[in-house]
Image (tube, rainbow, N blue to C red; front, side, top):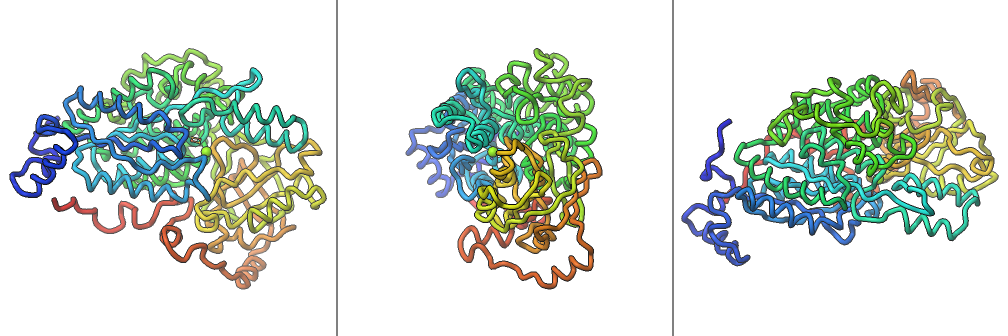
Length: 576
Ligand code: FES
Ligand code: MG
């Protein structure tokens, strides 16, 4: 490996020349109290910090940035902390997904425009991981990912509570009238007890596991709970390693290979991953120039069992338990040669190196392949006349009675309409009804909100039912569960066949056969299509208008078309 020379550093283009512009850069660095000794001959490492007071999951990032800086200085680099979009899953409306690509654009341009040689990305809350990775991959500088770590497990009345999952569960009990207000408030105060991302195997834990499996994290980093002192030590190690990566010129194209992407899919399936992961995996892979498809995901899913016994797929355990059981490295050891062990990570070494020493301390939490939580991977991809470009379901987190099901559709065109239906105890329906919400896709939502775990109708809840087949072009939270068919593509809002479904039509779900169909003749579908008129655009100006014009459908990862790697020539390096 040839080591980069100090004069070849990208940042030297800003700081080294004896000209007026560089004089400006140096004098402004000195304005911050820095001296030549701070930058001369040293890699400048951007710390892209997603700390924000609107981001509960990243509340520790001010502290962690200091540890990353310490590591960078130890290794002879110069840290440059730069704030970037935070993407709070809790507070952003209508949905953080509307802003994932905006954040990714911010990341890409921050790295391209600043005098930096490499980067440490700080993220963890749901969309922050794909946004940071997508942007940094497109920028092309050496980087590694510092995951936020899961928060402590929740606690209420001596019971462990899981993020999201237990919120939904207790809400159903409250609507059924089986818990008191006081108990409900106890759940509210106990479900999120520390900084860190959601501690179920929701989108956040799934995405950080995927980042590690892609080779973008230090080994084992993604499982360390946020409040653990080991997390601070990991942050410092990220800083040290980022400096070395610059000297080694370990750019993302050397890490994000096809083998790495396949490893990430395998690990995602084995963790019982969030359905959101599918969209983000496709988007990240495509930024690296790898055409990952829904069919690839389904194929890997069919041969990879779920072995992480963590809610919502598994029974009982949470990310803290997963860490004590050995974390992601122990899970990867169980997967063995299902992984491409030679894939190079940000360490510059193969991902399989040292995996023999990983230990599984609790085979009930991290199951051996011989005793899985679920015999296939977490997710299944469906196709049929309702979803010609695909739809997604999570068989591991639904009632098996619905794997093969036919029932009459009950269609809502908007969330308000749906709410009226589910709250009306006299609305005609049966446990066989297929509850449908449309116009909730990338353009219709807009931003494809996490409405896909459609609320159970009050009438069915009171009869004791806790699951039914639900169908939408929305996403659902990674902590959700149930027989929910999601991501129907193309979406209804742009005239996908879901737009043509009527209340009373028979819908057939066949999970083993991977089919989703409406029992309506092709002739009748054609007649309904001829009568269909497109709805007006949601936005006429601003970011929303740009989003609607450029966002791709769910099966393509919902990236903007102009951010695709193959869209025109590469962006030029800035003139200094
Ligand atoms: Fe941030 Fe769940 S709200 S990870
Ligand atoms: Mg979520």
